[in-house]
Amino acid sequence: MSPVSDPILPAEYIQTLADGTVKQVNPFSGTQVWTVPGRADRPLEIAPAQVNPLVPTDLTTACAFCSDRYLQTPPEKDRSVLVGSAYERRFGLLPEEVTATVAAFRRIPNLFEIMSVDYWQANYGYVLSPGADVRRQRYLASPGGRDHLLAMIRRRLNHRAATMTEDELLEQAGDFFGSAHDVIVAQRHFRDGATTDDQLASSGTLTPAEHREYLDLTTSAMVDLYEENRYIRYVAVFQNWLKPAGASFDHLHKQLVGVDEHGVQTDLEVAAVRRNPNVFNERAVNYAGYHNLVIAENDNAVALAGFGHRYPSLEVWSTSPTSEPWLMTAAERHDMSDLIHAMHAATGAIVPSNEEWHHKPPDVDVAMPWHVLLKWRVSTLAGFEGGTKIYLNTIDPYTLRDRMVAALYRLRDAGAVADSVRIAKECACRPNSLRYNPNLR
Image (cartoon, rainbow, N blue to C red; front, side, top):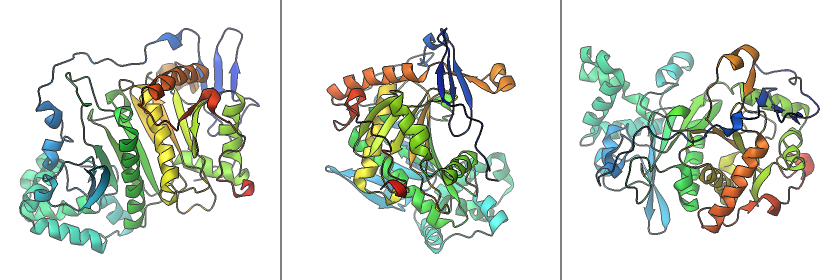
């Protein structure tokens, strides 16, 4: 159900009180957030309880996502392989082909999906597309394909599989070929040159070129899910980094989940833009510019310190006139990638975080800018928040800005982020820089 009216909003979304308390209101949801003096000094990084030395085999076997354990994950949909200096895509590899090359990034179904094929079949009469069914039959007929599928199905069903015949188990195989919940997995578990198990490979330790390919493979997976299942109304894209942020593995990966609703946040934003087509400029990027919260920009994207979020949050907004990420030019997508990568790099690899993508659903008739949030999961919601719905955020937007700006200058000087990234006072901060609104073109 879509909301019909705006939340009650104050004239200013950020207020600093005499004692230093910073009160914020989210301009789209009305969420109230306070940052209280003193609590901002709490440590952000979550250090591991124990650090162990690595042996060479650990680099490729640390978890089920690692490159020597490809067949411990469901049948691969596609992958990116670095050939020379360019990435090539490989689609629908068979078990014997999966281990023949090392993937820079690979797309696999989630073994324990949120929205199962059974859900779509029971509620909508969904059937596998002809292409997906061909892949299923080809996989079953391949050397090792049947055994791989049986192993994956048994792992998913656990003790329930013991009472089922092989044919009954294989009836479940369609889940892997019609999955609406996919995972994009990066190659490395540990960063290059790692000697201890706390030196994880994160989004920020990728090169800008690697991160662009990571984002491109994710974007192509989005449109593929929309095309494969016509009942999907929204593809949620997110990344959980480290266990405090919900990650099952400390191995870099994104997830895509097709759902049959837009979700509350998207409904709020659609309702807001229907009432005011320029709302994303006025309440987000323009406001951030007027209050010196813009952190960085390039030709097609802008990054700012977010306000009104339950956790310290960075926002990256596409300034492209195109709403859909998969319809943007490569330059527009890659500028978004470069700023997202820079935000991760400046955050650091030991800060737990969630990356959330927000885009215009295909069945919505209003323009909306693609934007990505990076939320630092450095606090735990407790009784105060539950009872008051006022959220205590450990770091205010201005302190967040200062931390990021200082780190970005160091990283750019070291060549660790794209040199096209303009930082702080280098940014133009032009009003209405988001060009999604056709009235402003």
